Length: 491
Ligand SMILES: Nc1ncnc2c1ncn2[C@@H]1O[C@H](COP(=O)(O)OP(=O)(O)O)[C@@H](O)[C@H]1O
Ligand SMILES: [Mg+2]
Image 1 (cartoon, rainbow, N blue to C red):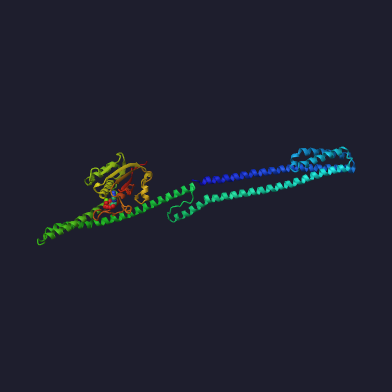
Image 2 (image 1 turned 135 degrees about the vertical axis):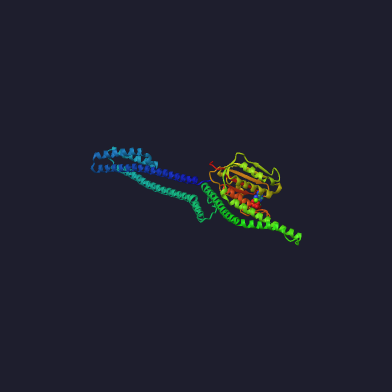
């Protein structure tokens, strides 16, 4: 996967290469101009010397002073020397035969001067030729120089243009790679401020943006999960308060109904003998039903009241295996086979719990598996030490994503804990109902059979202990309850 950092590095490298090439090119063209100017200076000196030489020649013919002739001769020698010395520079400007003709004219001129300037016309002619040739060289040199300056200026302008284009292209790439994705992310963040938790879409394939977006999406998922947990526990808390209030109010009238039914049952016997025995039996059966149903209602009320007396809850270090064994002992009469429940729980696992209340949790969970699975059900209980990061367990992730799990509670961070799984091979729980099983009074059992309070109480006891609970039901069947319970103390 590409990254923004590597792209920025490439852009900087390309720009640095461009600037480097520009500097090399500029210094090469400056050196070229410098060379041209040195040549120009040599040619200008040649031309000046030729002019000086001719001045002395003219002065000789005007005043006939031998010194002028000598000076002209010295300058002719100097010109010959310059012709040799700056031969390379001159060769750039003139064809070899032109330079040869110049050398020949200079030699002839010097010879005529050596002759004492007796043949004036010839000497003047040779001097004129030398000056003409040197002036034409100087002219060509000036034309060449200004041509070179023009060329260099054009080349420099072009390379500055290329550099500017490169910088613009680099800026464009930076905009596409960094600024645009950040703007798009900024737009997607806006709804968050209004409480709309929508997943972020991928705005770029660059590694930094991809991992940033993934982290944001993960955070949103966590937030959403916590929001649901808070909603759920608020709902449960208010329902719990309501339920315990109602239970309290119902206790006395139910007691009165039960008492009245029992008195009525006793009174049947003292009814006049004229009442036929069949009618008496029917009346007895009706009253018995009233008494039984009232007893069931009182049992529900008792569970609720018992549960709402939170002050009783007394946590102490307790071995998990001990609590499980006591719960199984109480359930023994209801277990169809000796091997219905199998346990894989290390004896050294300790919990910081109220053993009485925790016993209720295991009894309710095992009882539910028995109720759902019938006589052929098998229940397996396993437990292992865990930390705060083991919640929710990785194996739940898929079921949670598919809506086949419900999770309650967020474990206290930095706490040592025990992870307990209670699995059965019964019919499992339909995914439409799995979100409701912890709700009070939710039951799928036949009217009069279930109270719908078993799992509600399980969840409440687990949450009271600072633990967490999850239920999943894989498509293959069976239900699995996972409990995270703190051991107390620090990791
Ligand atoms: N192990 C299980 N297998 C299948 N369904 C279950 C299991 N445990 C709980 N349930 C479902 O959750 C519902 C609620 O359970 P609970 O709160 O204990 O109430 P009750 O047992 O009185 O129905 C049950 O009616 C049942 O549909
Ligand atoms: Mg139950």
